[in-house]
Length: 334
Image 1 (cartoon, one colour):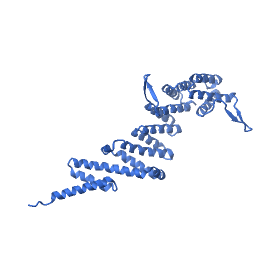
Image 2 (cartoon, one colour):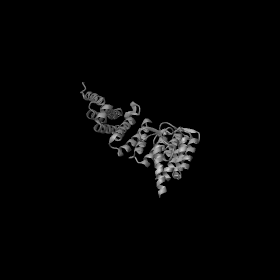
Image 3 (cartoon, one colour):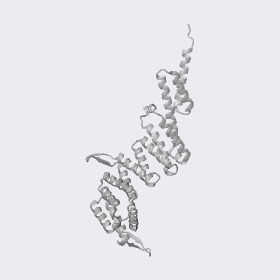
Image 4 (cartoon, one colour):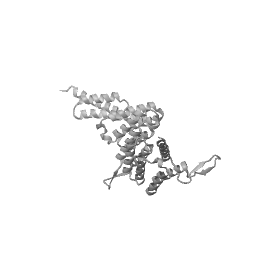
């Protein structure tokens, strides 16, 4: 039991060191006399130095030196040895060589087979770094020679991080945000909206909640505006309606931010687009000879969307129809 506890303590220290930056050489410490002195490479100090040095070797791609450092570390501190540590080392060496697919799988194996290991947090953070690289445009090699964009792989890894860490954890939230932002940047607005919505369910307030609400609004609006302008009225306007609701809620909750990004003007533009959508339906009915249905839509636009250009156009179309009807009903002189 004591041996297990000592191993846990050492591994926990390893994780902390792995997560923090430390210079492998020339490490200094403030002594009791407030003087900076070099850390002696003995006992715990030696462990800190070797761990920091090993991480630096991995980060800089020095695979051979990193392997030797891991072996030396396990030799000097046998209490850290175990199947979870071996898997972590294997994954680190794959990561060091830039073999991200195999590294991600090895980290995943560690997380699956040893869910209570102290190394799980370090493994999740490495997976986050791998996924971030893929989402930034890193390519994935398929069949040994075909290079494809790794966006899907990045999303998959980030999703698993969120599932494991929990969306309410800092790393889980960062992973979810990374997916939402990546989808939005790649104009996959519907996917981005769903991820922002998922985030908003957990974070309804604070900076994350604010960003999620704004992300939902922007994605729905962008999804509609993605089509050529002359074709937009042909598409479902429910995206605009959802965007309008999100922007209105954003303006209510964050009035200062809403003013800075011009939400009032955005809402005016959305109203114009919604009115134009209804107007186009009326024009369709007019084109097929159904004047009665056309006038119903024109009247609705003129009444419900006051102040829009579409409402003025609808009024003019109604006026033309009334003039035409009057001419048709005028008595014919003999």
